[in-house]
Length: 319
Ligand SMILES: Nc1ncnc2c1ncn2[C@@H]1O[C@H](COP(=O)(O)OP(=O)(O)OP(=O)(O)O)[C@@H](O)[C@H]1O
Image (cartoon, rainbow, N blue to C red; front, side, top):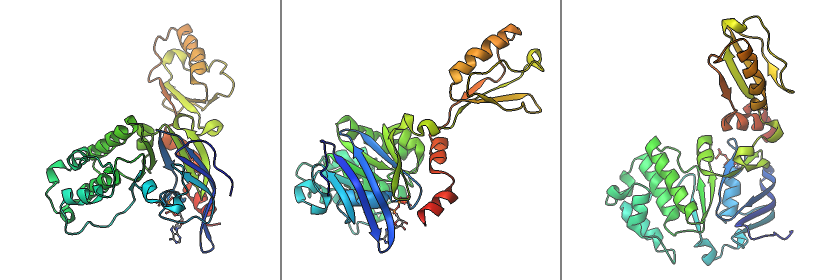
């Protein structure tokens, strides 16, 4: 095994995990920096949970070098575990205990837990503290999972799809919780299928496809040179009808106008394009280009472009 470098809370090199002859994780590298919220994105079955469970010390790796808070998770030291908070994708029911008792029970495992009442308020379960945990709704039970994961005031938190099943208000509350820990300098690894969630919370992300990182970096830069272009569109006013477009900047591609006069132009440099279009309109005494829009690709479009069609991804994953 090679030696991990740096003081990052998570360093992974060449991680592999096989289940029998199925290679779920195939040489994965990852660096998570101190205090950041880092998102793991990728289609179903890509290997995200397997990777996260190896980092949490729950699952054994087949090969590769993994350091989490300076330790090899496979050693599973007690004091190391106390510094880690885990909200898994699915948890069992906490039988026969009230909500407060469940959280108090888990708090007792940690040397410096947060006050139970504070945690219940943070996850929006304060008014349900005396309720039997088995009587909670699906979304409330998910909040309890989150409470159990954070009560130890961990240095590093793993959240595996924490907001699945939550209503929109509860989702925003869960986001506030992530921000609370980020503000306290804690590090969070967030696995999510909600790209708006990744965009709202994380600065950097890794996109995992078929057990490998296909891209890793600041969310604002995901896609890189393969990023889909922006689209500038407007409705051609009568003054400009039939005049043809001005010479466009390099790389800009105009579609033929639609029958009802909508013009779309695709470009990676929308500002340069506008600096050509606006004088062109002004010359024809058009002060406002009707319905002028600049549509930049959303994270969802960039992501879908990155992972390719789900059929192609599936084919790759089953090769
Ligand atoms: N215990 C296991 N035995 C055999 N195969 C497994 C096991 N656990 C996971 N796998 C397989 O490994 C692959 C990766 O699964 P994993 O749960 O890590 O994916 P994921 O990216 O977390 O997916 P999702 O987004 O659906 O949660 C999948 O093909 C899955 O079927």
